[in-house]
Image (cartoon, rainbow, N blue to C red):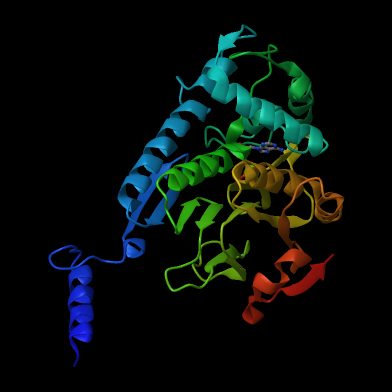
Length: 352
Ligand code: AMP
Ligand code: MG
């Protein structure tokens, strides 16, 4: 056995004990830190590699907590709650929240109103903010819908004002924005590879330590509680992937399921024939927010309109749609990075 081999074994043993230094250095790329964070109503896993991986994940955790406190609708002292509770008065909310509201408004415009943060009072009427679920009557919904629409939101500098009766809910975009911020922090720390899971919002940086792409599974909406209940697996590098699904949050009443993605046109859970929408884009900053807004909007649109929107080319992204009639519809840009799962029971269609 040569000295090189002995040294390699020794280093491997040291690394295995979590030790570094003492006569050798681990490949800096292979240092790894992974933490779990419960925030934004979801379980998150932040994993980074590289010399500064520990700093990177803990700075990212701090940022996740800061954004949770800033953007939450349910914590009374967040800027969003202050705005929602202001009864039509102007509130100083700061540039960041103003910027995010502005961005949300641009997605409302681009998606024909299917993504709309002013859906908040309707989300509450269904009980999704308090967990005391109920089916609101048509008259209640009709009245609430009068206050839905971005024309009821007024921004000026670092201040904002909502018309009386209007409220905002950033739940459809907050995790995507957070993913963008985590990507930025990882970039600042020179993280060469990593994976960030913020509920259904995933960010992968670089490739895996073994040089292959990160494998990201799309959950089977019919088997959300099974770890291997997937409809397909995607090979991704430097990408955001965001899923919106009717299985993620719902309640059942009189044998009917009511989920949390509301069609602003009706005030009811979107009944679009889809059970999930996954939007993927490269890891350019801003795309985390985009993927999140679009996954919600395209769920509301349904298959045909979602594909037309994709074909319009206004935004650069790829899609996996899962339908109620057991089809998985995949846009062509994913074809080479997409693995069907034979045992899933779904049929696969590739569209261009
Ligand atoms: P997501 O999981 O990203 O699809 O976001 C769903 C969450 O966004 C819901 O829990 C609501 O808080 C909010 N929401 C529901 N419907 C809409 C909609 N049409 N546009 C924007 N936000 C919505
Ligand atoms: Mg979303």
